[in-house]
Image 1: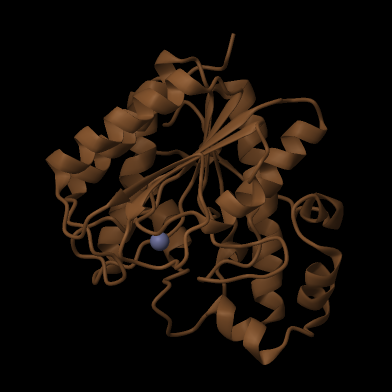
Image 2: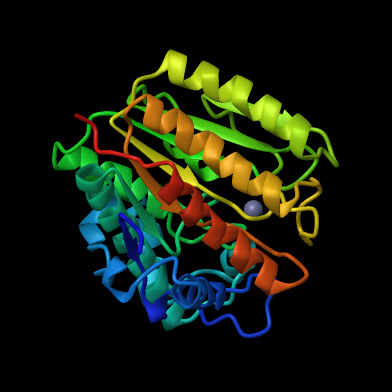
Length: 305
Ligand SMILES: [Zn+2]
């Protein structure tokens, strides 16, 4: 059993049919955590959908109206790269509610995981790259609005740069954005995060981990945050279909441990979201995501004192 809560709903599935984004992975991660005895049923909490007011702290009224009324243009739907459906919108509001809950539980318990979310390519007025609503930004703005936190850090290790995160928090000194990603990959262009680590193609475990460590050291030296949101993409994996890095499963687990180690040593609670993962075998993506929660357990994260 895990010493922290996991947020999950069967309705996280984005209803995509055959698609490179395996959104059934959320259910598989839940099932694997249970079948391997990593988590127990008591670990799981069901999210409420975010309110429209929550969503509107990040997204424009015009965009929200289009999403809710199904009146996006064809071009806007193409840019999202996921088919529009009422289930998709429900899943996005629910994932945002899940990240809000993960932030709340992280603050009380030291750590919490949303088995979903991490939609870091969503912008205030449009969606792109499989991302419609920026659940992490919604959760940070929610926690700031209640006074639960003043500052937050987003550490994004998805293979794709966190362009939506960078754009949303541009010029906001209360949120530090950190993205380590493959340079020669979507998105183009990459709006600047507080720290962007642009990696060359094909980098492996050892080099990746030493570069990550150097920049985490800098980030935690430069900024003190009340909450860390970890966007734990599974797609720096060497078998990923949309990534061009060459990390092994063990290397990815060490990556997670490194992030959690910095959080623990700096007394920063951690909310985890999953983000991307497009391994040839979906089971690999699922195992990488499950390993992130194992690394969080082993890190013994504690609430800020
Ligand atoms: Zn990605």
